Image (cartoon, rainbow, N blue to C red; front, side):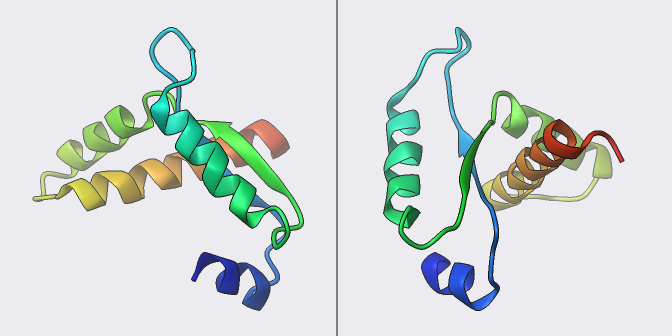
Length: 95
């Protein structure tokens, strides 16, 4: 489905979260992210890795501040949003 979206929407860049532990070293999840990106190499014009350190923590803090119930999927979605925002700010500066 992701490959179809890349083609359908003419995606120029795929941003993949790059997980590391608190010491900045790769983890088992890092290998999974790299493997996922490798599967898209022939489809995506450009794939970039973006550090995802503490994005889940930031996402949950944001959701708590909203004062509404949330689930793990909400944390993951918000963390993905933060990863993309971080990429955009690193690439193009703060808006």
